[in-house]
Image (tube, rainbow, N blue to C red; front, side, top):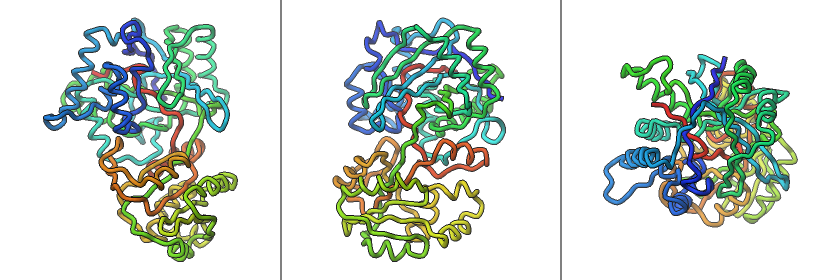
Length: 447
C-alpha cells in the first residue's frame, strides 16, 4: 500500500521574489546551455542555481554542488524561501496548448514513502543510466532537499482522488507561474485534514508507476541507503520519503509525446542501402525527398497508429523511408528478445533498438542519439546538424551532420502499466509526458 503524506513544503516567498515565473525552471535534464544562461539572468534566486548550478572559472571538481547548497542555505536564512506552517498537499494544474486545444492536466504534490523496486507498489517503466544518478546523488548530499518532483501516475478510472482535491480548492485562488514554453502552472496549498485523510485513503491501494524522474527516484533510494549505512536513518527520518506528483492515468490532460532520434556516429548510408539491409525484417517504402517531408510522413505514421511502423531518413540521399515490421521481423525479434514480453516487443522503441539498428543495419555501440519530440525539432536538427559539447542530459554533441534519423511512435499510458506490472523496463526515452513539471514550485527537505 502506497504511503502518501502531507508535508511542510519549502516555498518561495512571493513578497520577496516577486513573480513566481521568474524563479522556477523546467527539470535539469531539459535545460541546455542557452536556457541555463537565460534562467541565471532572469532572477538571482532562480532555482536553476540549485538544480543545475553552472561551472565557474577556477572551480575545483564538483564545486557546483557545494555552491548550490550555499545558495539554498542563504535563501532560507534570508527569507527568500519559507517553510509551510502546516503540513499540506499541493494541488497542481498545468494548462497548455496541444493539437489546437487548451488542455488542463491535474495532479497533487505529496510526500511518498520510498519503496525499492520489486518490493512494494511503486514501479519503474524505463531503464536508467549511471551518470545522471551519480550527479543527482552529489546534489542531494549537498542540499538535502528534493528540489524537483518525481512524476508518478496511478490507475483511477473515476478520478476519485483528484475529484476530492478539486472540490476542496473550489473557489480559492492559486499560486501561478508561466514557464518558458508558455505553459501555465497553478498550485493550491491544501491543509484541510479531512480532505487529506480522504485522499490518502483513496490513493493508498493504488499502484504508482514512475512516468518521469527514474534517475531521481533511484537517487533518493541511494541517499536513504547511505544514511542507513551511516547509522543516521530512523523510521521517521524524512529521507524515507520523496517529493512526488501524483496524476491519475485517466486524467483528460494525460498526453504522451513521441521521442524521435537523430543518430550520432553513423557513417553515410544511402536510402537504397538502408532498404536492402532492412528487407529481411521490414517492408520498406521510399516515401519522399527533402527534410520537410518529415511532416507528411509523420502524419501518415500517426494515422496508421502502428508501433511497428518507423520513419527513417538518409542524409546521403536526402530521402525518407517507411519501415513496417514484417512477420519475419516479428519472428526474429521474438528470438533476440526472448526474455521480454509480447507487450515489450511490440513497442516502436524496442523494435528500433533491438532489431532495426543492430540486426538490420548492423549499428551497435552508437553514441547516445539526440532526442527530440516534435517534427519541427527533427527538421531543425537535420538542417543545422549536431551542436558541439555536452548538453543538459550529459550527451556529447559531435558538431557533425546527422546522417540518420528515426521517427518513432510513443508508448501509451496503458503500455506503461502493462509492462511495468510485468516487471520489465522499456528502453530509455520510450515516453515523453508533456508538459514537464516545474522545479521551484515546492521543495521537500530530506535531512
